[in-house]
Length: 539
Ligand SMILES: [Zn+2]
Image (cartoon, rainbow, N blue to C red; front, side):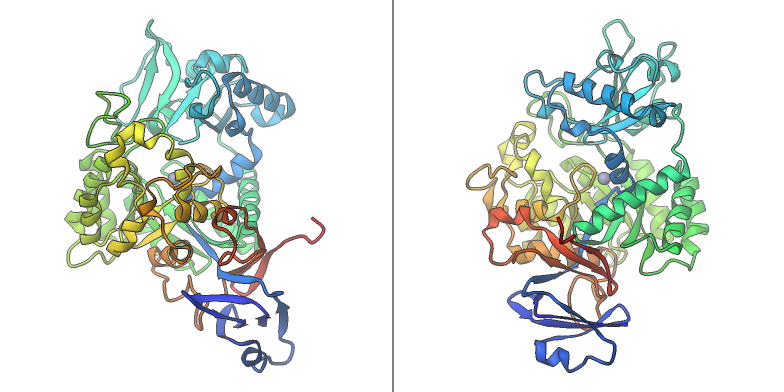
């Protein structure tokens, strides 16, 4: 199959644009002027007029949770709550509207007490009891590291009889020793959640399909998604293979695999990792680990105590010993590792683990996801070890309001240091961690180039020295993501030999005012030469 896209403004490289592309069998064969490319058209070649619009390589989101994106599209929108009363109302209304969906319980996420007007406290079990005393409920905070359960859910987990000792999380108690409902970190969360029914395969599939449609409409052509975990990895692998077989996987999907049980990792390396059916559309990626929590929830692991909560240094969710063991196992199996680190102490401990296996260059491209709180010394160490940073500039929209309070202005001024990362030559790739944030790449590009929140605050930008150029932001969202998946010769550029993964924008990102970048829309998304999204003209 041949396609020509002509009459466009094709971004090839910084200050290098062409008019047209010639695509054959899913690959870009040539880029050039309209005339040059038209001469290549064979019989039956499809011709697509770009109408003078800007064409970029398709976006690669280097860390998100596609399955949860789908769940969020279906489940109640807790992120809209601006008070605890509203949160309760959203929950109540959902149960009323969709009684079948909540029969065995309701798990949803997205609330953020920092966005509450008035009292900015986290909801307790008593608040969620106002939604229901009969249906077990868990509402996760937007960060995914804190959750609140109602009394029914806590009862099912036996927490009124006995509070278990957990290694990777805490169950908060009220003064009388009963649980408050607040659960910190994954282990506490799963201790309660294991009593909820698992979603059926059909439900999971419908989540994926909603999320994939959503993703391609925002111009994502590849996603690196953390969905497979210890308790579901086999199911998730099979489900994605099924979606691919049935032609429902419209984009390229790279698994980030969150296995924290060494036995599961061994099993995976011996079986799935040997599966040769994986290809350029569906492929296995790194082991994904978590070292700490979130800045919003004050569970990110810091080298100094929280400025706004003395005595608190955050939470280490995986010990150094376990980290060494898992990193060692993966590395031996030639598997890349990427680890969630938000606090500076978390990053430096993970680097300690990586350093033990990185010898003579970081060939497996082990990386750090988020890498938010940093100082120059830490960044230089990241550079020296050739470790990649998988960052989410859209986090600035919220975090720039809290980071000075959390860690103090000195450390804040060297954090979210996207420009310094580039200057040091660290490979940075961008993403959204969606559903933590909407998976739309444009607000993230806007935040990276302006260092402002989506309302335009602060006027001069938050530590504006860390602003990156527009080209740097686009490249991190395309070529940077390609690099972390070892595909920088196949993806992230619109050049001969590269995959025909691209987007056509509604306006020219290179000439519009910076503050309008966040509002850009995608008119067309192409993956491997196939149009997977086209803006509906009627809308
Ligand atoms: Zn994540």
